Image (cartoon, rainbow, N blue to C red):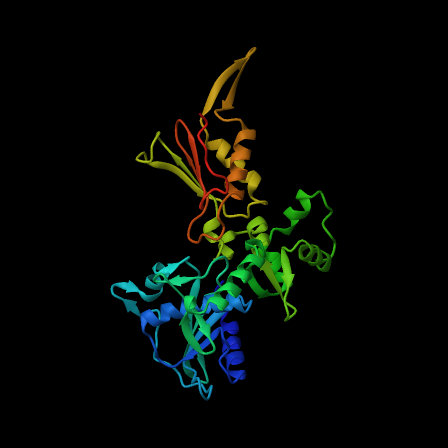
Length: 348
């Protein structure tokens, strides 16, 4: 998640206080070579994961010998590679794609740029098909260091997607504002505690939020995906929102008559999502004794089961894509990102 302005300066201040470059922090003056920046995105993402950090950083405008603020003329939001913006070009060269953000601030009245890079989470990040790592203060190719590569893979095997952080270092008040915590207690038929402290403690016990070393809180991917009031509050998960498209005919050439994105978490938004999909499905009119009755083409129980599987059986590590439900005049198609865990076999 992009850092708040105050946190940017805190990170820069902390990086300078060590008087040495940490493995996951690179200091630069004015180097703005797109190829090298892309390599550092890979290297620092992988190195941050290796050292169990949530982010790696590149900081322009700090002398890496004296750690004094010297300022920089690097302006990332104006930088380009060919006809593409720098950040877009780097993003297209990464595999898998991870989130990174450029921030520009001032320290001691001098321009400083900080590049915030999410740590790798399931596999080493490649830039232009090469995996990089930081060894000491040097950027190197990962496959030249097989022992380090084994350590990195061991790190990936220990931490699940749900344990990763959707947002970190926020107050308990902000954490509760971002999460629909009443839905959690309602779903489990629990009385809503009368005190904020008791609510926070229960959320912590369920690993929806976790305390950090500073005394503030982090929201886990599990908590955000299930109970977000708005998934757009969590940029790393925003594209995991379920998109529903209703077409006027039986193919995608037909115009989309309605489109909606489910903005809530999967748990607190599930009933509303099922209700919306059912309202969009074709219906058949049947007569029971003396009454006419509209019956959806698909039983609600079947729709609930399909949508639940759509949510659960997706590759959460894939960035930039999410689940989708498409409604046609004669069928419903559901799509989720990733390869199925179970091999597909013909029914005949």
